[in-house]
Structure formats: C-alpha cells, structure tokens
Amino acid sequence: MSVQTLSPAKLRKQGIEALVKELGPIGMARFLQQFETGAGDYTKERQSWLKGEDVKSIVKEIKKRRMKS
Image (tube, rainbow, N blue to C red):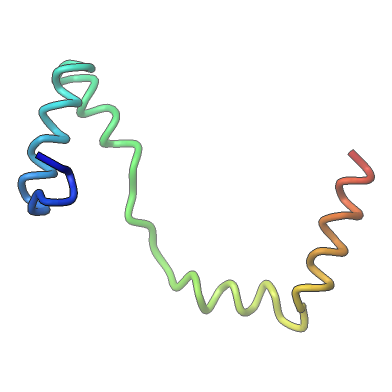
C-alpha cells in the first residue's frame, strides 16, 4: 500500500508503530517530544524582519557574508 493512499489516521498509526519498532517506546516518546507547534505569527514577524528589504538586497547580503567565511 502506498503512503499516499493512507488516511491521516492510518499514516500516523503506522508511523508510531515504525518509531516504536526502531526506537522502542521510550525512544519514540523522546523523539516525539522534540517537536513543538510553535507560537506567534511567523508571517507578521517576518514582515518586520524584512521591512524595506527586497530579494536583490538579501542576495547581496548573503554573498557578502559568504565572502567573509
């Protein structure tokens, strides 16, 4: 069966089973604890970080930083 044909619930169940098989129940729990949903509004925050920036200026800054490395 293809992963694409699985329902979200069945995919989640099989994923948990694979993690338990490979990592054991404690390893599976520790692995899953690493992930968070996050908080805040990334889009709004990004707009304030990039205020006044365009793609060309961002690329220029990236190239400048790479030259220093």
